[in-house]
Picture: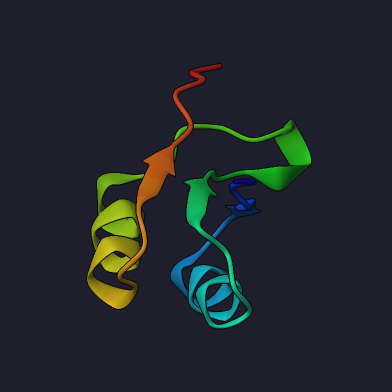
Length: 61
């Protein structure tokens, strides 16, 4: 089975991805910098908003 993972930068995007059939979310911040680790607040808000798994990217710069 194929797993659909969508890269999102905020909780609203993750909610839309979940409603459109995503299986899990890769959560990032700072799209202009190529994606960085999201803040704790962004991660918590996203996890509280959706039911599918959320995987935060871990990429400090």
